[in-house]
Length: 316
Image (cartoon, rainbow, N blue to C red; front, side, top):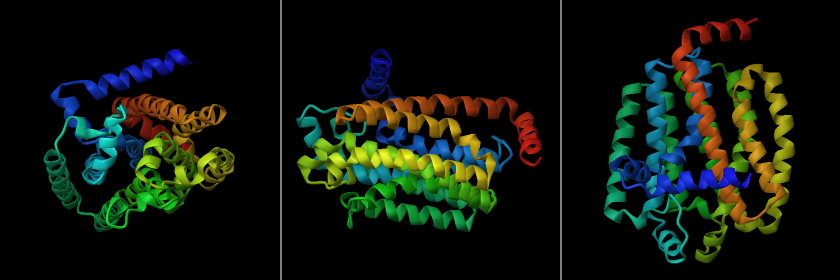
């Protein structure tokens, strides 16, 4: 187990220290932060489009969500200068602490240009409901950091992140592809609690710094009770998942991703420390990436066969 953790950490350290132009571009855009919502979007979107990976709205929708994530996280970077400086001075190095290699001006222009690109992609899609959804999420992401700073409000901040990583991509598929409401509700039920657990883990990993600068996240507010909350989430996730399957059984498509999150959270629960929370996040992210790559390869190579097979199975 430790060997696997060490290998994951080494890979993350390499990605966060590489001097290549591509690596620096991905870091300033906080591309890793977009992975969870793209995972949900990819699976639900492929199902709603009959595994048609090459559907132009599907690809543009993924790009829009990526840009939305970059813009929101970019705004967060602009106003988390104090946290970044404290992390650097404390010798804490993480991929999302960007002042160690970028200036405030570079972060500002990244946010501005990404926001413009997002508006252009949303305009090209020409879907009013999706545009309103993106606008709402964009505003939520802005006030999450400043001026209201939802990030500093226990539970509300965590729920905001949970919405962005689970409900947002599912609603995006619902509006873009005229997905069935029944399936939308089912996928939301299956993914909400595991995503909440992951967001809480992320807060636990940053709890030491948050306490030093006075940020009162859910993890800081809960303290030692966070372990009990994680346990409750793990227990509740199981019946929610089976209810989701009962509502619309194709929800089994997200099972590999939910299983990864729940297993990682369970391992954290067994050995509960802030440092282990960091390891857990890295392992969840690494395994989500591997499974997503498999899904995408299947969608590209076998999209026609897979679409026919899914249609026959789910409509039987």
